[in-house]
Structure formats: C-alpha cells, structure tokens
Image 1 (cartoon, rainbow, N blue to C red):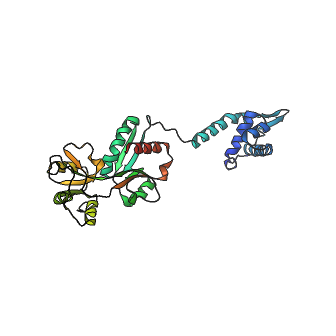
Image 2: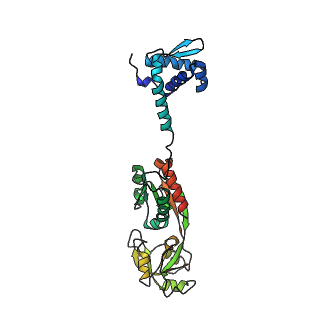
Image 3: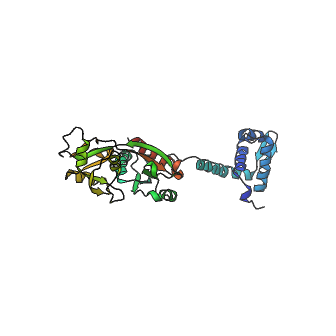
Length: 299
C-alpha cells in the first residue's frame, strides 16, 4: 500500500511522537489533552497511512514495531522544524543584516533620518537604509509591492489602509543670517516681517505661496516672496549669503552656524509628522525594532 501524504496531518505525527515516547495510549492521550478513544482512532489512521501495525499491545501499554522505531527520529525532527517555523525568528540588532526602505522628504531626511542613522550605526551596523522620495499618489502600491517599508509623511497624505503612529508636532520659526538687519530684534514686528524679501520651499517647485501666506491673508496682510526652491537643504546656504528671510520648521534650524532663529510675528499653523507602514511588515521582529528606534530618536 502506497502512503498518500494527503491523508497524513500534523496531529497524527504528534500522536505518533507521543505514543513512541510514552509507550501507552492512556499516557499519550493525557499528554495530548485528548481522550483515549481519540488517540486510539488516530493510531488506526497512522497504521493505515504507514501500512504497519506500528505498536503491539502488551500488559502495561504498547511496544513499537521496527517501522515505528525507524520513524521516531524523523518525526521528532519534522515536529521540531514545524515548531520553529511557527515561532517568530529572534532578532538580534547587533548582528542583523537587512535593508529597510524609507520614503521621506528632504525635511524628514534632516529632522528624522539623521538622528535615526546616528543611533542605528551604533546599535545595528549591519542594517542598510535606502531613502526614497515620497510619492503620495503611489504610496499604497509601493507598500504592497515592497518598494518601501516606512514612509515619513503628514496625516493628510496617509492612505487609510496603513498602520500609522505620530512622531511629533512641528512648529514654524523665522530664519535669517546672523548679521541680518532684523537679527538685532528680540521680537519681529509684523510690519518689518512683511517688508522683507522672503524665500520659501515648494516641494512641487514653482509655488510662491505657502502656509505663511495663508496665515497672513487671514489677517489681511501679505509678504513678498522672491525665491521659491524645492528643497530645504539648500535654503541655509542661500540665507547665509543674502538678505532673504524664511519661515521654516524648527527642527531644521538645529546646528546651522551663521544663522539666527526668531519667532514669527504671527501664528502659523504647524504640522504633525507621522510614520506609516504596511501590514506586510507589521509583525516582523526586525521591522518592529527599527520602528521603535525611529520613534525614540525622533524627538
């Protein structure tokens, strides 16, 4: 009789293992938390599968046949491998080797990725990081394909089918070179602020209005924006060599020699930065560790 693997399930192998260890249907049933008739029924199925009696009844239990003894070690190995398969793989950051793909704007590069990388290189030097541009329209598809693992975005651009967690709330400040004519003022006046030439960052490029202009319009004022750039990273260099001023997120002003930070003379709505990720990596031990590190370094 040829054994058909379709008739053999994991529970039958567990019963066979228990019978081989216990040499008793009663004790095997207790170990498996089953009734004795249930284990007897499983033994009948095992005999059919392997075309062998497997066990012979004796006065104090059962004794295995030669075929059953041949199966003992392979069955234990199979059950051990299945058990290992069902357990989450242990993650050791110090020895881990993997690649994580993060979608981020250049703002998030400096505000979030820089402190994250400083900690990552110390704690998990074998992990590689690929930083990609944020494409809001393609986020869901990119996550599904595995093109990205994490995205650093704002709540209004987060697809509803992703996991999300808030990193922090950001506020805006005014930035200028340290010897700018306005730098001597402790508090900028609205008139002096509006009289200056401004630079702003437009992610899509070419826009000369932003959140600051919306705030000014709400109180019947306006400013003159004479430079629009598509990256925060170049802005400090421009401010150092010009009389332009700019309203920027506070976290971009750390460690910028030659520049001065002042509070803006009106309330400008800030924004919330969040992390989003896909169900595909939600329970993975390595990705969970990386997300926790990201949360802890984004302060």
